[in-house]
Amino acid sequence: MTDIPLKLFNSLTRQLETFTPVHPGEARVYTCGPTVYNYPHIGNMRAYVFADVLGRTLSFKGYELTHVINITDVGHLTDDADAGEDKLEKAAAENAQSIWQIARHYTEAYWADIKALNIREPAKWSIATDYIPQMIDFATGIADKHCYELDSGLYFDVSTVSDYGRLARAHTDEGESRIAPVDGKRNAADFAIWRKTPPGEKRQMEWDSPWGKGAPGWHLECSVMSGDLLGFPFDIHTGGIDHREIHHPNEIAQNQAHCCTNGLDVAANSGANIWMHNNFLVERSGKMSKSSGEFLRLQLLIDRGYHPLAYRMMCLQAHYRSELEFSWEGLGAALVRLKRMVQALERLRANGNANEISEVADPDRVFDTYIWKFGDELSSDLNTASALVLLESMLGTTTLDAERVLKAANQMDSVLGFDFSNVTRADLRIRPKAATITEPEIETILAQRKEARATKDFATSDALRDHLAAQYVEVMDGDPLGWDWKLGA
Ligand code: AMP
Ligand code: ZN
Image 1: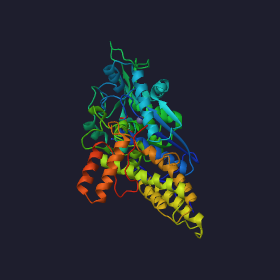
Image 2: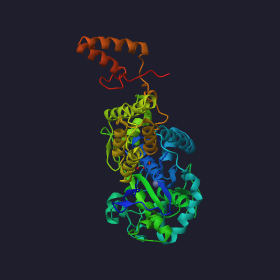
Image 3: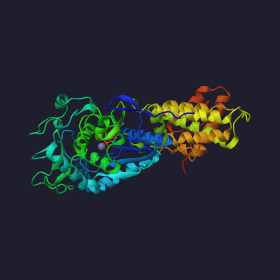
Image 4: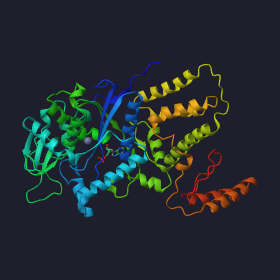
C-alpha cells in the first residue's frame, strides 16, 4: 500500500499543505513553551498534547524528528503592548522569592504535567535565559536596518519588512487599534526587542547590552532559539491560536530581518515552512485564565478522581483546530472510553478473541489495511477523532487474531500515546482526594443495592446509588466495567 502524503494546515497560507521536509527524511519542529510564572492550566496543556501528536505522527510516518520546546523564564510582559511588568518579576515580588526559584518551581510543575499526559520529551527544552548572548547578537545584527531606540528600549520597526502581520491576517493599520502605543513608537505594532531597565531601578533579571542594562523582549527568544537549534528555515512552528495574532507575526518579522529576505509569498522566508496553531480549550465560567486566581490545573482533575490520560483522550476526541469546551461530564465520558479500550486490550491479552478465525484469507492484508487507514486519518491534518474510531472498530472485531490486534493497537498507540502496554484498568481508577468511604462499606452498599434491584425496588436502588455517588463512588449499570471506583493504596 502506498504511503499517504501528510497534509497539514498552514496558518500562514490558511491552506492544507503537503509536508515536504527541508532536510530529506527529517522533521524539525519548534513549539512555543510555557511562561513559567504560574502553574499551567489544562488549556495550556492542550497545546502540548497537540504538538506531541504532531511529533508522534511525524515519527510514525518515518521522519527523524527533532523537536524543541522552549521555557519562557524572561521577557513575557503582563501586557502585550510592551507596557506592564515582566510576568516572572511580578510573580517573584508577590511571593517574596527569587525569579529563579519561581521559574524552577513552575517549570518542574509543567514537566510533571507533561509526564502525566504521556507527552514525549522533546529533543531539547531550551531555556530562554540560557540564550541571552545569542539574543543580543541577533538583535545587534538587525538593529541598524530594522530597529530604533527609545528611552524604554530597542524597538522593531514593522514597516521595514514586507507583509507584516500576514499570519494574523491583520494590516499594520488594524494593529493600531490592537496595540496601545508606547510614546515615540513609529508604528503602533512596533514591539520591543530589548527593554531597558528604567534609570534608578534594579531588576532581578537584567543583562548588559549595547542598548544599556535590560532584558530581551519576549518574541526575540523564540526567533533566536528556533534558528539556533533547528536552522532557518525549519519545518514546523507550533503554538496556541492566540500566538497567531501577535507573538508569531513578530517572530516572523524578526526572522525576515535576520535572514535578509522579505516577502511571505515564500513561506520559508518566515523562518518555518509551516505554522500550526491549536484552538483553545474553553470553559464557560472563565476558570481557564491563569490570572483569574482559581483555574483548572491537571492536578485538580486528578484530585477529583480523573486519570490525566482521560484529559489526553478528551483532547484527541476533538480536532486540534476546533474549539474544545471543557466539562466534567465530557471528561468522565472520555475516561470511560479510555477504560473500555484498556479493558478490551486486557481481555485480548488474557483470553484471545471470542470467535477468532485463524483462516482469514489474507490476515496481513487485514492489519495492513487498519494501519494504512489509521495513517490516512492522521495524514489528513491529524484527524485523531477518526483514528480513535478506527482503533475501536478493530478492538471490537471478535474474529481477528488477538496477537495481531494487540500488535496493531500498539502501533496506533505510538501516535495516540495512551501507554497501552503499561496502563491497566486499575491504574485508571484514582481515589478522589475528598473520598473517605472504605472498601467494605462500598461492598455492603453494593450488596444492598443488588438485593433492591433483584426485588425491583428501584427507589431504594437509586437512593443507594446517589449515596455512593455523593462519596465519589461511580456505579455504572449495564456497563461492562461494573461499579468503577477503588480505594487507593
Ligand atoms: P503561556 O504559558 O501563556 O505562554 O501559554 C502556553 C501555551 O498555551 C501557548 O501555546 C498558548 O497559546 C496556549 N494556550 C493558552 N491558553 C490556551 C487555551 N485555553 N487552550 C489551548 N491553548 C492555550
Ligand atoms: Zn514563542
